[in-house]
Every structure is written in C-alpha cells, then in structure tokens.
Image (cartoon, rainbow, N blue to C red):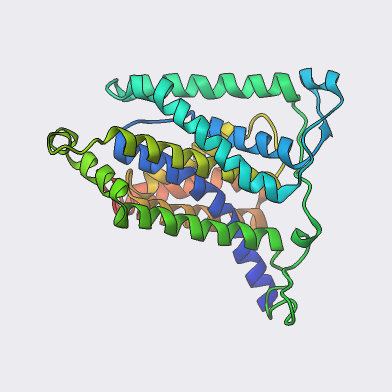
Length: 313
C-alpha cells in the first residue's frame, strides 16, 4: 500500500472514530457529571440526521410524509451543518428538564429502561413518518472527491482522502478541544466539576449547579445532533441509526473509563481503527469488531483505559 492508500485508510478510521466520539462525549460527560445513563442520546443523533436532511434537501419520503410530495427546505449542506446543532441543543434542554431530571435520583436500571424505551419509540415514529428506505445527504461539489486547496491543489499523500472525511475529522478535533477547554477554563465548567465532586457542598457555597448541568447536557445533545449530520454525509440515513450508534458509543465510554473524556477519545480512536481494519479484511465483521475490541480491553483493564469517577482532563 502506497502513502496515498495509507492516508486514505487513516482518514476512514479517523472519520468513523469522530462520529463515535461526538456521540460518546455526550454520554460520557452526562454520566460523569450527572450519573445519568441516557440511552435516549441515540434519539438526538437520529433527530440530527433527519432534521439536517430536511434543512439540506427536498425529497420524496415514504411513510406518512409520502402524501405531501417533496418535503424539505433545500437550503444545502452547510446550513444543515450550522442549524441542526442549534435545534438539537434546544431539544437537549427540553430532554434534560422533562425526561432526565426526574430520573436523576432513580436507580441506573430505571434510567436505562426508560431512555432505551424512548429510543425504540422514537425510531418507530421516524419509520412511520419517513419510511424505512435509506437516504444519503446531497453533498456540495466542493465536498466530493479528494481535498483540493487553493494554489497547491491536492497535498502530497492526500489523493485518497475524501474531502468530507477530512471535514469530519477537522470539525471533531475542534469540538473536542472546545469541550476540554470548557471544563478547564470556564466558570460553568468548573462548577460542573465541583458539583460532580460534591454537589451538596458546592450548593452550600452558593454555586448554582442546575444551570451548568443543564448546559452540559444540551451541549452533549448538540454534539450528537452534529454527528447525525456528519454521519448522514458518510452513510445511509435510516430510522435504525439511533440504535446503531448508541450501543457502540456506550461500549466506547465503558472501554475508555466511564466519566473520563481522555478515555473516551482513546476508546473512539481504537474503535475507529478496528472498524477500518475489519472493513478492509472482513466487512461482515465491522460491527462485531468493536465489541471484540472491548472484550480485549476490558479483560486487560476491567475499569477501562483511563478509569475515572467523574469528568476529568
């Protein structure tokens, strides 16, 4: 394999890892900060994919929407990329207030069952509305083919790296750096970390932790919504993608160390690399490969790669 092939392979691995990471980050920070298992996080990814699709294009769908002909705003991919996380942020605020908050003090099994039920119901609702046929995002011309820069054209070794995968990886790097900076440098981030350590003492000191917790929940939701748009640009969008993304993402969180952002990043990178290798060697094993990886990692390190009881750097 020449250098172009190696770079192309790496960007396949990194782009898949990026999707898992954007979803897993929300799971990790919510569980690390709020001790809340949110399987309904997959609904946010699913919603992001379809809301972005409605913004980006105008298409004929199956299901109940088939009676309305072409449906969608047809504004293009970039508006979908910008507006979808904003919409899902608002959805995340509503989810935290009305679904998550009443269950913060309940057993983890209660949280798991309720949010998993919400995910299943949401997928069936999407199937009823849009049908079960897969759909792919329309990409603008500048996102097709290999990356091409002004003056220099395609950089050496990048001819096999598609522009959309480079975009996915670059955006993920920026967003992950942003969430690390949020926890380290902002007052809200420090309040979340303090509330995670000892919420009662933090409130006695006059720090209101409700709003920071709400903000971090909604930010995690926005990340999942953006992942839905990016995932739609790489793979088919169907009513089943919520379940397809949430289980591997939860495995990545556990494999990395529950509540550890650093562990989540490493776990997602390992999962993306394993996915890409399995795609090359045995495509039928791509999904199973992540679970096999988790078995190996958790056998060696039962508490995860970087075990942590709270959100950490």
